[in-house]
Length: 277
Ligand code: ARG
Image (cartoon, rainbow, N blue to C red; front, side):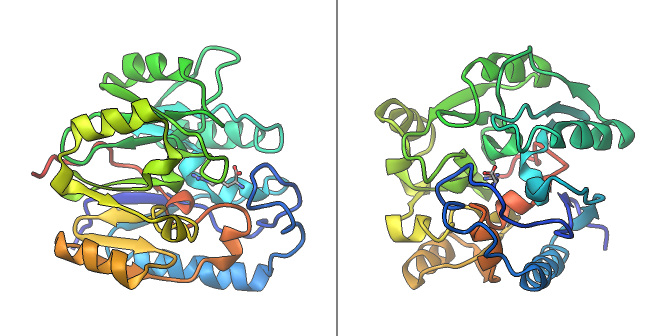
């Protein structure tokens, strides 16, 4: 059966940790097992392939974080806004991702010079309302939000991150089918929490605890009623199941050393998804 959702992934042929641009990477330089990373990535790919069509892109040398395709850009329909990375270590990826979008038929939007923005790491569609949550605070500038709204023709709601462990919104915020939201509130400032509470009704907010957020439980891939993540506590699993979801876990320890997990390793290519309430 043809799958409705396509997901972009990049094999970890050149993945390692040899610089530290987030707190998780510190002390993990040269600690990645290449073999284990490849095994874990393949297991994730095969699991994702049960629910979506996986599209693989060519891995490039010299850009070890390119496995994190969530940071390629933000897709809406056949348009894509390409990332403009905060750190020089990741900037060479911009061209590879832009080329990929162009050669796959996307109209590519380039942010005004000097505006930082890290793609779907800092932008997530609400699954019921259709608006785009966009993050700022560590990697992406607030200025990017106006461009996103214009170029992608979507409503953009800004969220401000305040805890450096959670430097992209997808590390601590995961919109789910039917308008549910799994998130770690303490990673956001007061105004952001207010906005979330205004937009997402209390019965649809699934609050994640600090220890769960710290194993990247919010960094999950959601397709329909299925959710894929690195690790899930019994408590969180219960909450998600109560809301009608099935949770699948697969170990991603090698990627956690770089500060990323399941969602970071993927980019949804068919956004926004059809609205289901
Ligand atoms: N080491 C990468 C970085 O710091 C990890 C990126 C994780 N990606 C994400 N979408 N949260 O940029």
